[in-house]
Length: 374
Ligand code: SF4
Ligand code: SF4
Image 1 (cartoon, protein in one colour):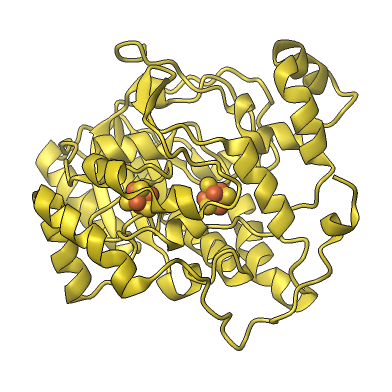
Image 2 (cartoon, protein in one colour):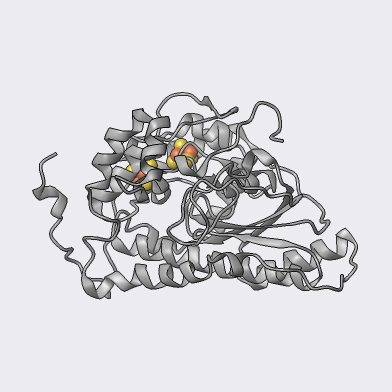
C-alpha cells in the first residue's frame, strides 16, 4: 500500500505513453473515455514531429543507436529473470557493500538504497513501445528494496541545450544507466534473490522519488532530482530486489530553500512548463508541478528533448573544486545560498546555449512544424 495519502502513478497517464496511443484502437477509446480533457491537446501533440526529426541524417544515429540498444535490453527477459536456485547468504552489511561498489564499477557516480514505497510503483503499464508487456496491465512489484543509481551527464554537451548534442548525451547516459541496471539485477539474481532492473526503456517504478528516499538528492523546482555532486545533470536507473540491504536516509542539502529563491529554470523554460510560484499537492506529495504536456510539445517544436532547465541550473556545474566548495556551502548555509544566487548571474550571465562541437552538423533539417498551421 502507498504510504500516507500518496497515490500511485498510472503509467498510461505519462505524456509519452499518451503520445504512443493510436486513434481508432481500443486503448485510445478506453483512455480518452476516462480522460476526455486530454484528448484534444494529445491529438494535437500527436500531429507534431517526433523527437529528433530535425537532426541531420548523419547525426540522427547519435541519438537512435543508444536508444536501439536500450530497447533491446528493456525486454522483460533482460530486465527480469529467475534467481539462481542456490542462495548465497550475505549479511545486509556485506550485500550492501558489494552492491554499492559493484554499481560504481558499472559506472554509477551516485548510489543509494531505500525501501520501496508502493506509491512509487506504477499502478498500470502504459509505455509498451519498448517491451512486449500489455498496455493497461496491472503492475505488481513486491520487492522491498530499491538501489538507485545516478549517472553524470557530459556538461559540455548538455550546455548546448536545446541543441542535438544534448539529446545525444541524454540518450547515451540513459544507455549507460540501463546497462548498469540490468547487470546489477543479474548479479543479485546470481546470489539467488529476485531482482528487476528499471531503466528508460522499461520502468515499473518512479526513479526520482526512490532516489530521493535513497539520499541521492532532493527534488528541484524543475522536477528533476537535484544532487550536490552533479546538480540535475544526472540520469537515473533503479534495481529493486528482495535481498536485504541497509537503507540510506534522505538528505537535506538546502534545495528547497535554494529553489524557492532561484527560479532560473522557470525563467529560462521556453514553454513555461516550470512554475514561478509555490508547490502544490500532486498525488499526495507537495512539489512544484511541471506541465509535462507543454514541455513535451516544446520538444516536438525544437526537435530535441530541450534540457535548458538542466543546463541553466546553478547546481549543474563542472566537477571542480569551485563547484564542490559552492555546493558544500549551499547545502549547509542559508546565507551562502543567498550569496551564491547573487553571484551566479554576475559570473555566468543569462543562459545561452553553447556552440555545437565541430563534429556535429551545425544546420538542422527544415523544421517541418514551422510550415504547418498552428
Ligand atoms: S534552476 Fe534554480 S529553481 Fe531551478 S532547479 Fe535549479 S536551483 Fe532550483
Ligand atoms: S525541458 Fe525545456 S521545455 Fe521542458 S521544462 Fe525543461 S526547459 Fe522547459
